[in-house]
Length: 231
Image (cartoon, rainbow, N blue to C red; front, side, top):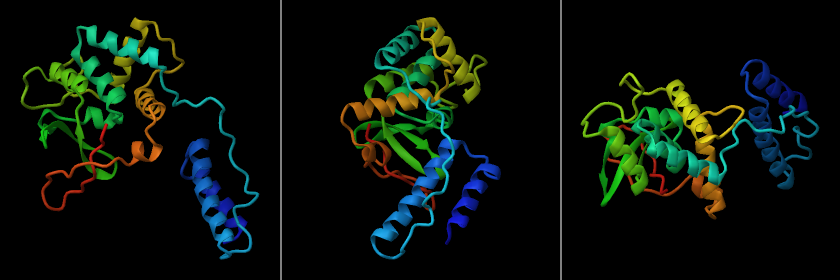
């Protein structure tokens, strides 16, 4: 492979894939790292990724999370709110680290117990299923949202049907405005980013945050499973 091929790959990511500059830069970093190792191991004399121009990435990341005091104020406001779905939403995203589609896609039937722990069966990226242990605060928030129901979605919007990312964004914006948090663009992923930052600040390694150990799921044969997130 020559440098021209790497440049074509970058142009494909930008023009065909329509990826953000930050995503293009990360993927180019992976390619450059691979060829750097090839040079170190004397497999290649030169890296074809050398001198390939990287896209300009904005200095301000759109995925910045909340500060610790901001998040504490947000979840306190959600807990005191008359809408229990807001409290459960903030808990699932900010205390459990779920992605918004994982939180909104969770059902009452996904709740259970495993090895003495209350757990939530979560369907993640690629159809992988994990059993996530529920800390007491998250379990209480879910119980309030479920309210003795035995079926249906855990999170519901104001119409009583499954909450989607748009309804979740509106709920978070309302809570943020109530508590006086002023952010340029409040969105659900900020709470997941807050969770990851909190875990790293607490001394948890990035590898453990991304690929934690866990317990097996009890899925039918052929189902895709993955370890539980030990949060």
